[in-house]
Length: 198
Ligand SMILES: Nc1ncnc2c1ncn2[C@@H]1O[C@H](COP(=O)(O)OP(=O)(O)OP(=O)(O)O)[C@@H](O)[C@H]1O
Ligand SMILES: O=C(O)c1ccc[n+]([C@@H]2O[C@H](COP(=O)([O-])O)[C@@H](O)[C@H]2O)c1
Image (cartoon, rainbow, N blue to C red):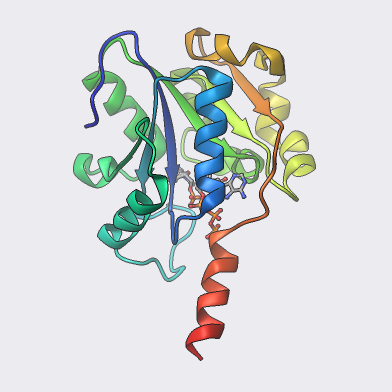
Protein backbone atom coordinates (compact mmCIF):
# COMPACT_ATOMS: atom_id res chain seq x y z
CA UNK A 1 0.00 0.00 0.00
CA UNK A 2 1.43 3.44 -0.84
CA UNK A 3 2.02 5.86 2.04
CA UNK A 4 -1.22 7.19 3.54
CA UNK A 5 -2.59 8.74 6.73
CA UNK A 6 -6.00 9.72 8.06
CA UNK A 7 -7.26 12.91 6.42
CA UNK A 8 -5.33 12.38 3.19
CA UNK A 9 -7.30 12.76 -0.03
CA UNK A 10 -6.46 9.89 -2.35
CA UNK A 11 -7.77 9.28 -5.87
CA UNK A 12 -8.20 5.65 -6.92
CA UNK A 13 -7.71 5.26 -10.65
CA UNK A 14 -8.46 1.71 -11.75
CA UNK A 15 -7.67 0.42 -15.19
CA UNK A 16 -6.43 -2.32 -17.42
CA UNK A 17 -3.48 -0.15 -18.57
CA UNK A 18 -3.00 -2.57 -21.48
CA UNK A 19 -0.81 -0.67 -22.34
CA UNK A 20 -0.71 2.54 -20.27
CA UNK A 21 -0.62 5.81 -22.22
CA UNK A 22 -0.32 9.57 -21.83
CA UNK A 23 -4.09 10.06 -21.43
CA UNK A 24 -3.93 7.99 -18.22
CA UNK A 25 -1.32 10.43 -16.94
CA UNK A 26 -3.42 13.39 -18.06
CA UNK A 27 -6.49 12.05 -16.22
CA UNK A 28 -4.45 11.52 -13.04
CA UNK A 29 -2.89 15.00 -13.22
CA UNK A 30 -6.28 16.59 -13.92
CA UNK A 31 -7.78 14.89 -10.86
CA UNK A 32 -4.80 15.77 -8.65
CA UNK A 33 -5.10 19.42 -9.54
CA UNK A 34 -8.84 20.01 -9.89
CA UNK A 35 -9.81 17.94 -6.82
CA UNK A 36 -6.86 19.06 -4.67
CA UNK A 37 -5.81 15.44 -4.03
CA UNK A 38 -2.70 14.46 -2.08
CA UNK A 39 -2.08 11.40 -4.26
CA UNK A 40 -3.53 9.21 -6.99
CA UNK A 41 -3.12 5.44 -6.76
CA UNK A 42 -3.32 3.59 -10.05
CA UNK A 43 -4.95 0.21 -9.48
CA UNK A 44 -3.66 -1.92 -12.32
CA UNK A 45 -6.41 -4.49 -12.71
CA UNK A 46 -5.77 -8.25 -12.77
CA UNK A 47 -8.58 -8.18 -15.37
CA UNK A 48 -11.64 -5.99 -15.96
CA UNK A 49 -14.67 -8.21 -15.23
CA UNK A 50 -16.39 -6.81 -18.35
CA UNK A 51 -13.43 -7.32 -20.71
CA UNK A 52 -12.92 -11.07 -20.67
CA UNK A 53 -10.62 -12.37 -23.41
CA UNK A 54 -9.16 -9.09 -24.67
CA UNK A 55 -5.51 -10.21 -24.97
CA UNK A 56 -4.40 -8.85 -21.63
CA UNK A 57 -0.61 -8.50 -21.10
CA UNK A 58 0.74 -9.99 -17.83
CA UNK A 59 0.04 -7.85 -14.75
CA UNK A 60 3.73 -7.30 -13.86
CA UNK A 61 4.46 -6.02 -17.38
CA UNK A 62 1.53 -3.57 -17.23
CA UNK A 63 2.60 -2.37 -13.79
CA UNK A 64 6.22 -1.85 -14.94
CA UNK A 65 5.09 0.07 -18.03
CA UNK A 66 2.71 2.20 -15.97
CA UNK A 67 5.52 3.05 -13.51
CA UNK A 68 7.79 4.14 -16.37
CA UNK A 69 5.03 6.33 -17.78
CA UNK A 70 3.65 7.85 -14.56
CA UNK A 71 6.91 9.45 -13.33
CA UNK A 72 5.27 11.74 -10.78
CA UNK A 73 5.85 11.87 -7.00
CA UNK A 74 2.11 11.92 -6.24
CA UNK A 75 1.16 9.08 -8.61
CA UNK A 76 1.63 5.60 -7.17
CA UNK A 77 1.24 2.62 -9.48
CA UNK A 78 0.00 -0.45 -7.61
CA UNK A 79 -1.17 -4.02 -8.03
CA UNK A 80 -3.44 -3.67 -4.98
CA UNK A 81 -6.32 -5.72 -6.45
CA UNK A 82 -4.07 -8.72 -7.09
CA UNK A 83 -2.67 -8.38 -3.56
CA UNK A 84 -6.14 -8.14 -2.00
CA UNK A 85 -7.55 -10.85 -4.27
CA UNK A 86 -10.33 -8.55 -5.49
CA UNK A 87 -11.55 -8.04 -9.03
CA UNK A 88 -14.78 -6.14 -8.60
CA UNK A 89 -14.42 -2.46 -7.81
CA UNK A 90 -16.98 -2.58 -5.00
CA UNK A 91 -14.92 -5.22 -3.16
CA UNK A 92 -11.66 -3.34 -3.73
CA UNK A 93 -13.02 -0.07 -2.36
CA UNK A 94 -14.72 -1.75 0.60
CA UNK A 95 -11.42 -3.41 1.57
CA UNK A 96 -9.37 -0.26 1.08
CA UNK A 97 -11.75 1.77 3.22
CA UNK A 98 -11.56 -0.84 5.97
CA UNK A 99 -7.74 -1.00 5.84
CA UNK A 100 -7.04 2.73 5.47
CA UNK A 101 -9.37 4.26 8.04
CA UNK A 102 -9.76 8.03 7.77
CA UNK A 103 -8.35 8.28 4.23
CA UNK A 104 -10.70 10.19 1.95
CA UNK A 105 -10.84 8.08 -1.20
CA UNK A 106 -12.29 9.30 -4.52
CA UNK A 107 -12.91 6.99 -7.48
CA UNK A 108 -11.60 8.36 -10.79
CA UNK A 109 -12.75 7.20 -14.21
CA UNK A 110 -13.01 8.32 -17.81
CA UNK A 111 -16.37 9.31 -19.29
CA UNK A 112 -16.60 6.05 -21.29
CA UNK A 113 -16.77 4.18 -18.01
CA UNK A 114 -19.55 6.39 -16.66
CA UNK A 115 -21.64 5.41 -19.70
CA UNK A 116 -21.20 1.73 -18.69
CA UNK A 117 -21.15 2.20 -14.94
CA UNK A 118 -24.64 0.74 -14.44
CA UNK A 119 -23.27 -2.61 -15.70
CA UNK A 120 -20.70 -2.82 -12.92
CA UNK A 121 -21.34 -5.11 -10.00
CA UNK A 122 -23.23 -3.20 -7.27
CA UNK A 123 -22.65 0.19 -8.94
CA UNK A 124 -25.08 1.92 -6.64
CA UNK A 125 -23.17 0.48 -3.71
CA UNK A 126 -19.94 1.92 -5.15
CA UNK A 127 -21.57 5.36 -5.42
CA UNK A 128 -22.63 5.02 -1.77
CA UNK A 129 -19.06 4.16 -0.69
CA UNK A 130 -17.11 7.12 -2.04
CA UNK A 131 -17.29 10.26 -4.22
CA UNK A 132 -16.63 9.79 -7.93
CA UNK A 133 -14.80 12.01 -10.43
CA UNK A 134 -15.44 11.51 -14.14
CA UNK A 135 -12.94 12.94 -16.62
CA UNK A 136 -14.19 13.76 -20.09
CA UNK A 137 -13.05 11.65 -23.04
CA UNK A 138 -13.50 12.28 -26.77
CA UNK A 139 -16.54 10.49 -28.12
CA UNK A 140 -17.90 9.64 -24.67
CA UNK A 141 -19.30 12.93 -23.33
CA UNK A 142 -22.86 12.59 -24.65
CA UNK A 143 -23.19 8.88 -23.98
CA UNK A 144 -21.95 9.37 -20.45
CA UNK A 145 -24.34 12.26 -19.72
CA UNK A 146 -27.31 10.33 -21.12
CA UNK A 147 -26.37 7.07 -19.41
CA UNK A 148 -28.30 5.28 -16.69
CA UNK A 149 -25.83 6.15 -13.92
CA UNK A 150 -25.54 9.87 -14.76
CA UNK A 151 -29.32 10.19 -14.92
CA UNK A 152 -29.92 8.25 -11.76
CA UNK A 153 -27.25 10.14 -9.78
CA UNK A 154 -28.04 13.55 -11.33
CA UNK A 155 -29.10 15.21 -8.12
CA UNK A 156 -25.84 14.26 -6.42
CA UNK A 157 -23.66 15.98 -9.04
CA UNK A 158 -21.41 18.83 -7.86
CA UNK A 159 -20.79 21.89 -10.00
CA UNK A 160 -17.53 21.80 -11.89
CA UNK A 161 -16.11 24.68 -9.85
CA UNK A 162 -16.53 22.67 -6.63
CA UNK A 163 -13.88 20.05 -7.36
CA UNK A 164 -12.01 20.77 -4.15
CA UNK A 165 -15.13 19.92 -2.11
CA UNK A 166 -15.59 16.48 -3.68
CA UNK A 167 -13.25 14.40 -1.50
CA UNK A 168 -15.02 15.59 1.65
CA UNK A 169 -18.55 15.40 0.22
CA UNK A 170 -20.69 12.62 1.72
CA UNK A 171 -21.43 10.01 -0.96
CA UNK A 172 -23.19 9.71 -3.26
CA UNK A 173 -21.45 12.69 -4.83
CA UNK A 174 -19.83 13.05 -8.21
CA UNK A 175 -18.39 15.56 -10.62
CA UNK A 176 -17.79 15.68 -14.36
CA UNK A 177 -14.49 17.37 -15.22
CA UNK A 178 -14.15 18.93 -18.67
CA UNK A 179 -10.83 20.21 -19.90
CA UNK A 180 -8.08 19.13 -22.23
CA UNK A 181 -9.23 15.88 -23.82
CA UNK A 182 -6.91 13.24 -25.20
CA UNK A 183 -8.02 10.85 -27.96
CA UNK A 184 -5.48 8.19 -26.90
CA UNK A 185 -6.62 4.67 -26.16
CA UNK A 186 -4.98 1.34 -25.38
CA UNK A 187 -7.03 -0.25 -28.17
CA UNK A 188 -5.46 2.11 -30.74
CA UNK A 189 -1.97 1.50 -29.33
CA UNK A 190 -2.44 -2.29 -29.48
CA UNK A 191 -3.61 -1.98 -33.10
CA UNK A 192 -0.51 0.10 -33.92
CA UNK A 193 1.81 -2.45 -32.29
CA UNK A 194 0.08 -5.20 -34.25
CA UNK A 195 0.68 -3.37 -37.56
CA UNK A 196 4.37 -2.84 -36.71
CA UNK A 197 4.87 -6.48 -35.76
CA UNK A 198 3.43 -7.72 -39.07
N1 LIG B 1 -8.22 9.24 -23.52
C1 LIG B 1 -8.81 9.12 -22.32
N2 LIG B 1 -9.51 10.14 -21.77
C2 LIG B 1 -10.14 10.01 -20.56
N3 LIG B 1 -10.08 8.87 -19.81
C3 LIG B 1 -9.38 7.82 -20.31
C4 LIG B 1 -8.71 7.90 -21.56
N4 LIG B 1 -8.09 6.70 -21.79
C5 LIG B 1 -8.40 5.92 -20.72
N5 LIG B 1 -9.18 6.59 -19.84
C6 LIG B 1 -9.70 6.10 -18.56
O1 LIG B 1 -8.65 5.46 -17.87
C7 LIG B 1 -9.13 4.34 -17.13
C8 LIG B 1 -8.35 3.11 -17.53
O2 LIG B 1 -8.60 2.89 -18.90
P1 LIG B 1 -8.00 1.68 -19.73
O3 LIG B 1 -6.76 1.18 -19.07
O4 LIG B 1 -9.06 0.71 -20.03
O5 LIG B 1 -7.55 2.42 -21.08
P2 LIG B 1 -8.34 2.48 -22.44
O6 LIG B 1 -7.53 3.33 -23.35
O7 LIG B 1 -9.76 2.87 -22.21
O8 LIG B 1 -8.26 0.94 -22.88
P3 LIG B 1 -9.05 0.14 -24.04
O9 LIG B 1 -8.90 0.92 -25.30
O10 LIG B 1 -8.31 -1.18 -24.04
O11 LIG B 1 -10.48 0.02 -23.56
C9 LIG B 1 -10.63 4.24 -17.46
O12 LIG B 1 -11.36 4.88 -16.42
C10 LIG B 1 -10.76 5.02 -18.76
O13 LIG B 1 -12.04 5.59 -18.87
O1 LIG C 1 -16.56 -3.97 -10.65
C1 LIG C 1 -17.02 -4.09 -11.80
O2 LIG C 1 -18.05 -4.72 -12.06
C2 LIG C 1 -16.23 -3.43 -12.93
C3 LIG C 1 -16.65 -3.54 -14.25
C4 LIG C 1 -15.90 -2.91 -15.24
C5 LIG C 1 -14.75 -2.20 -14.91
N1 LIG C 1 -14.38 -2.13 -13.61
C6 LIG C 1 -13.16 -1.38 -13.23
O3 LIG C 1 -13.08 -0.18 -13.94
C7 LIG C 1 -11.74 0.21 -14.07
C8 LIG C 1 -11.49 0.61 -15.51
O4 LIG C 1 -11.45 -0.53 -16.30
P1 LIG C 1 -10.85 -0.47 -17.77
O5 LIG C 1 -10.69 -1.88 -18.22
O6 LIG C 1 -11.80 0.35 -18.55
O7 LIG C 1 -9.52 0.16 -17.63
C9 LIG C 1 -10.91 -0.98 -13.58
O8 LIG C 1 -10.49 -0.70 -12.27
C10 LIG C 1 -11.90 -2.13 -13.59
O9 LIG C 1 -11.65 -3.11 -12.63
C11 LIG C 1 -15.09 -2.72 -12.63
